[in-house]
Length: 260
Image (cartoon, rainbow, N blue to C red):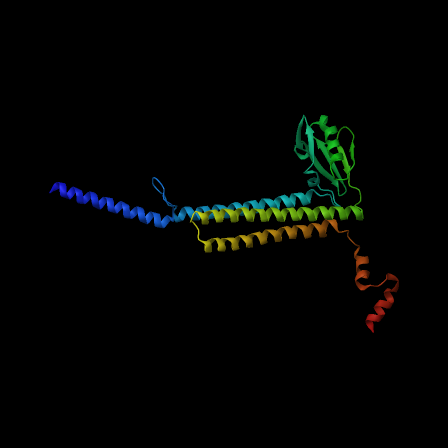
């Protein structure tokens, strides 16, 4: 009797584990493997999705900051210390950023003053500025370096405008590359049967909206840079007559014609 009960119990346990194993196979949509197959929980899948979304947004945000920094470093009509952000100096055999070894101030709107923490590096700083594409001639008096911003010519403005447009386009490409990487990560989850095809379509749609949002931010930065910094300002007096298509010499006649 004891032996018979033992066999029944053994058979019950065997069938129970076999049935649970079958359920696990169906739930995981897995393949035949040797050993224990562990299914990802809903919480783990959601965590993976959230991680992909956060990573994509963080990378796009860094791209925006990089575009903004690049725009600020482009020389425009007004002196700004950020113009020297990309200038690197050969300091004791190692290239370092100029701003890390010197204080940069703006005495007025058309000049910059470089005060080195180590005066022995002034020559290297002077050379770095000359080799940059800033178009400024440094004046090194042995104590500080003075930089005067020459008036921007129409030709130079056009060149800078092209540089800004190129950097804006590079930023957009970087944002779209982030979208591509995130989409690949979602497709990987789909192959692992953690996401359905519909899930991936919805997530792809959300990702496209996020991409469009950051592309618009880059467009906004580009337009602002073009409008504020690169477009030569016109005198309000001249602009008034340009809008009216009237010469100042014929102003009385213009007013008279408006009164009739």
